[in-house]
Image (cartoon, rainbow, N blue to C red; front, side, top):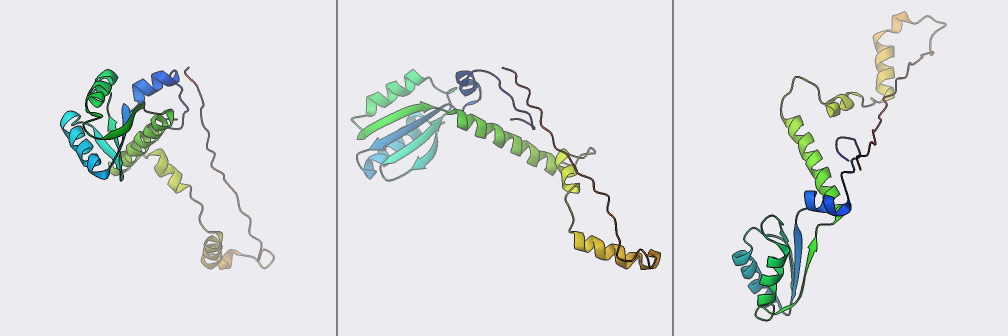
Length: 176
């Protein structure tokens, strides 16, 4: 979903390759000291990798696929499994959920950026904020306090309201 429209741009694998964040490498070690060695190894061999999680005997890194091939990742990891006390490791691709979350994050980042930049055209979110309902008791007090002389004795206590409702619609065109 981008800007209120549901978009289907290709197969699951195509979406992962095109919009995913690369690989998640999870390493489980035999001891916490080995984790420090694994972190040093990643800093030297995969400097562009981002440390996502670090626990007692487990670390998880995110590595963009544009920096290195899957074969190179496995080759480097297999060379140090015994040396670094690695009990096991896994390399996985970004999930489709991650792809969706990234789309949503990019959309919310764009909205925040548009709200920060002054613009001559009102943003859709700015227009929606104008449609916020105001509390009815405050409105009633204002009507009665501002125009008490306009009410006839027969009309006293009778107030009619014209109600407008905002409608929100979504276009769910698919491109697959």
